[in-house]
Length: 291
Image 1 (cartoon, rainbow, N blue to C red):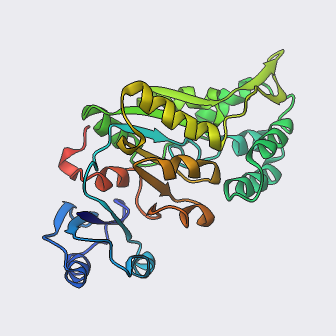
Image 2 (cartoon, one colour):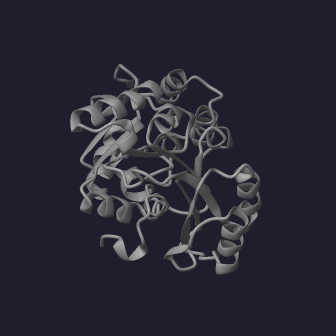
């Protein structure tokens, strides 16, 4: 059995009954269940429809996301999440670069790296090199003044943890940021790259080894093995090319507001919803969300 989920941005709840029922009827699905009126609904299916992606594309202009996934084992016991442009709305290295006066240049490299056009490790070393001599105190100021949480993150973490899940933040960014975000949102652990500092200034170097695509995949396998789980028990979320291996290995890999080249390689794509979409995809109704 499979489950079809339709969802949209909770800030602009545009999902109507006619849309849900017409799709359910067209696909011969079972009874529709509203997880959150106007925001998310689901219904069971016997198989994955042949025209899934045509229907998905047709719903995108309406700002409605659609996902079809196996019904079994939907509620996951591990959340493994990217940070930049996923749990937070910014790319931390771009914000540091802006403080260093090279923001636009670095942002261009970041965009290409996240779209898979550049080698992640080489691109990270080049960008960090441009931060040389930036005062260490800039990091705290950037976190305070420039970093904002992605909507829905608190509810996602609180709800999954209230239901016994473990949460890991795994980033190609920097530990100075993941430590703060992990603490703020309630992640159980975090992994990221370490910016090297000397005399209260960034040296322009990052500690080896670089945490990139392979390290994120390794983290998924390491953490599930340690917890006595399998990757099938995990839901992963990210937006960049360095997240793809992790997303494709997890039981549910969600491309959230992802680069087009990344989303095209994922079967679960959320372009309009916020992080609570990961709860709806697991079958949680709005009234089940933890405070």
